[in-house]
Image (cartoon, rainbow, N blue to C red; front, side, top):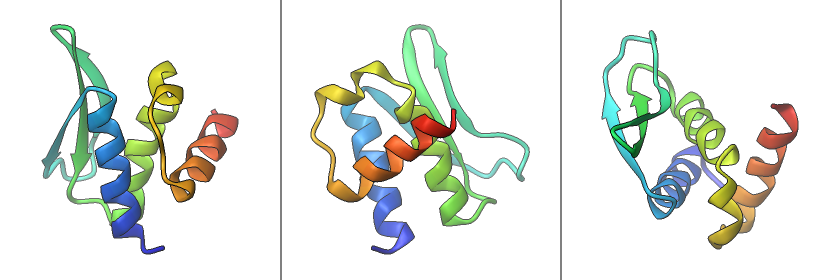
Amino acid sequence: MHTLDLLEQAVTAAEQLGYQVRREWLDGSGGGSCEVAGKKWIFLDLSLDSHEQLMQVLDAIAQDEALATIPLPASLQSLTSRTRRAA
């Protein structure tokens, strides 16, 4: 599966978990997840390539305990489990 397809699947999963996803040009200096005023956010750095953006989303959702409550495509299941093991 292409990285862009995986990225869109990961963003959809993040949204199902209650994350707001913003795509911003951060010039390689940031991105990732945070919580502001009780809302979960993921900032994707548009200066990064699609694989690096995918990793930003996977890093965020792999740590979320609610991940087990939503159905994931098989392609994302294997990637999130690898991300969890690496953490």
